[in-house]
Image 1: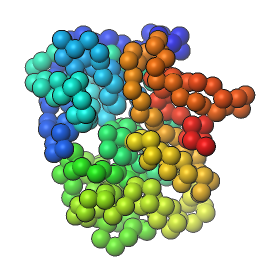
Image 2 (image 1 turned 90 degrees about the vertical axis):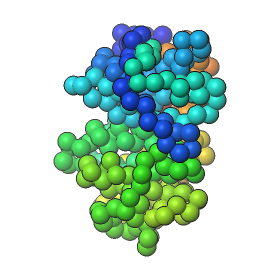
Image 3 (image 1 turned 120 degrees about the horizontal axis):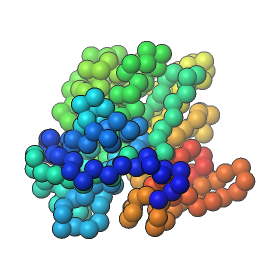
Image 4 (image 1 turned 135 degrees about the horizontal axis):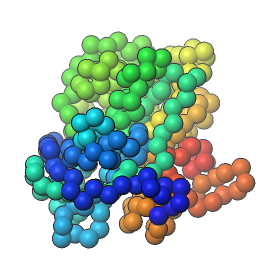
Amino acid sequence: MSSTHRNTILLDDHARVLAHDAFPGEQFVLRVRAPEVARSARPGSFAHLQVDPMVPMRRPLSIMRCSPTEGWVDFLYKVVGEGTRQLARRKVGDEISVLGPIGTPFQTHALRTRPLLLGGGVGIPPMVFIADSLRAEKSYRPFVIMGSEVPFPFNARPSQMVVPGMPDGVIACMPLLEDWGIPSRLASLQGYAGCFEGYVTDLARAWLKTLTQEQRDEVEIFACGPHPMLAATAKLAREFNLPCQVSLEEFMACAVGGCAGCTVEVKTPSGVYMKRVCVDGPVFDANSVFA
């Protein structure tokens, strides 16, 4: 384990499944009772879950929400292989071993009061987590754009919140964010009602173009999703000269920095280094990983 994270990654061998809801596209929202993890989790951190007692390899899942007072943690995941298929079979009352929270989280900045949160597919959870963390911070005005090429893991509805700069008809939102008073819009190439027909970065660009320079100076981009989406996000940030943090998705074996199987090239002022996504990330400055 990395010395930077020593004594910060906790093991709960008896986290209990409190809810496990299925959504179209073999997507699931899992809620487990894991009080220690819930108390320490920060937006951008993840956990390493035992999918089944008979499967030795854990699976890394981004944390979507948590309640430090009630002790629960939410994960959104999609079935992509046998491991997550085994996890999808876990029922309310089952115990799951949870290792976490792991990783370097996102960092918001007081002068960047208009966070633009971009989530694609299973990259949606960290954006929900950041939005949740900013609810009590009245100085921040986050705007969330989510994209998916399978049905969204929630029942989208028309937004009642006006977002200047949105193309006509782009009104679909995530109800949870709407209930929190945080504007959101959805993007997809699948023709879903009320969604923007295109990529999240295309919709973000359209919104950014409507801002004054003074307003853009208040924007910082936070993103999580597939590699091509993050590369496009980094390009978008450079186009508008905006700071941008990205959370990378990589295959992980140990997830605590021991195996170095999730390394990526990261540019620093002193040169290019190989960094571990699990403990050195998963959050990085976009320009350090996308040229």
